[in-house]
Length: 213
Length: 316
Image (cartoon, each protein chain N blue to C red):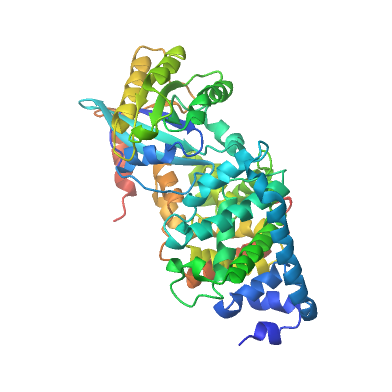
């Protein structure tokens, strides 16, 4: 049975190959850390419910994209229907930080006429000894693009929850203020099942009829 | 020991015998023959093997050092970071000697095929060949076998044979990996059209919940179902793919359709987008073996012949 949620947000996770996109999402959605995993090809789908205020639940649908250039023609199609995004770089890999600008350009050129609320994520912050990007410069870059910045570690479960929840709250505020509007034919934001309405009781009846007895 | 070498006189006959699965003992030689790497003519085989193996190591000598060149360093970097992530759960593939073999094979293939270069997914395609050619020298517990303990000559032969057989496979599906991946785009469209004809319920169910075929079938094409099946099943599947004319490039489409329909009950019981996508990304094949693959292939064969003359449902 469908859990009750206020809104459904679609998020996209982008960034260079091996910055840890899949690991971060798996930590968030499955609560575990895989030491190694196959490289993502194309796009994988994940989902989780988050509670942003007591009783206010948002359903997140998360698209995990392949970092390799050759898959861009596939991953591009997912920008348009995303309301939010996590742009990851690896704090131990300077090059992945230098590519942040390219990723933003790539996203912006394929999201028109919509826009995506991005969060900049410095990943693998448990590897402090190998750090190649300082927190200050990452914050400065994020500020220049009007993004928040957070450092995370999927391995040690640092700020993983915070990254997704903060982004979700920001989007929620923009929806509440009317800056982001629900539109037909756009999957970025959908309105959810609200309890005690005709709509939801219909859903319940329908679900009942479909149950396997 | 081996009726393949002794009795099977023509390649045609060999294909016929191989379609329904090749016995483990003769699989290495049969794969070399079916892939077109080894000539059907027995007298020429030894010479060809020797020459091709030398040719491969000639490429290594000539090109492998260029992996640090400005022009190739991105290609090498991507291969280098993907190899430890290839078959991550099987200890065999975590051995440095094995990882170096994969790196060399993939790098040489990539620079010799600049139209596609190295694309993630191609790394998976080395695995079945490597495992099958290694199986000639390992009787049990292959997953933990120490490859570095084999004579150097043997290691080199396995590497060269894996390279050439993988190259033959990729020759038939290179448009899966060129710019914008047209081979995959076309095959996913063809899959959608095929499913709309063979199982309207499943097709309409996807439509109703706004599931697009590309969302799950991209990987089925890009990695030839290797991410969806245990390795032993892929090896069995490839017996047939190599026995079929255009097995990897064309018959695979029918296998994907049969594979999808295999789960129709589970699919139809999911009544939201996310349940469907999670199911399709994680189909429970972990227990699958020869029997399941055999049934899958039989169904694919049936579909192929039923729809072979259907108007333009699949433009090659």
